[in-house]
Image 1 (cartoon, rainbow, N blue to C red):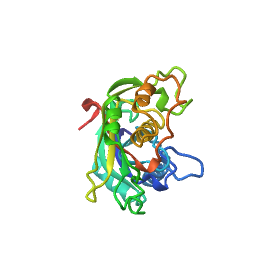
Image 2 (cartoon, rainbow, N blue to C red):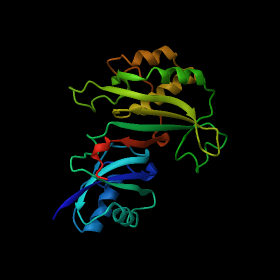
Image 3 (cartoon, rainbow, N blue to C red):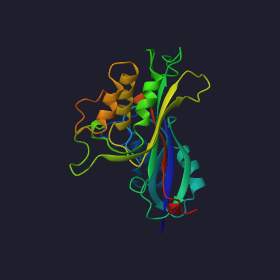
Image 4 (cartoon, rainbow, N blue to C red):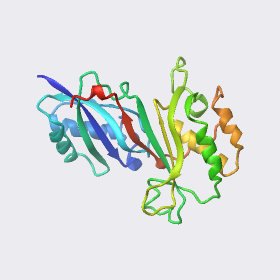
Length: 260
């Protein structure tokens, strides 16, 4: 029977997931999604994600590729999946794609945000799931200075987990957006780092944020951040920021891959 290729756009609260990728005896986003699809079609289904978010990391725009029988429509598939998925995982959109679409390799850009909770209630259990509480003094111009250095192509070897990329990988990423901005949250008080690039390395955003926050609170000079953009190892990077502030916001694909 003929098949159709679909892109699913997922939103999830990553707090209670052990990350995106299927793991034995662990609750993961991919595992929950594939289980829901199997219940719908009564057969094992494999999906491909645009990126492997870590445990505790959230998404508002994780892109997933799946092939199903042609009688499925985007509208019907979205309704059926949302009737099967748990409360912390939701299909925000379904798009029909051309067969050559690949959720990971076809992506031209990904955009992340990292939220810092600076308001008085940042430690509330209703807020700390999605923003890292922060109550130390912060040099905001220093944060902006660091973010400005990220635009363009750089080798981010210093901001990646060692050994997670092949030896032949040059660790080069093209950053098209990097900025600190106030949060749009109605309660106010938060600070958000926003970054977009053609690719990201393992823990890259969390290493960037952790290092910038150390600059912002005076634990390291701002020039050391720029030096890391040319470093051959990650020996001098700051510890990565905690996962709960990180969110995959969107994944971009060439328009010609969309079937409608």
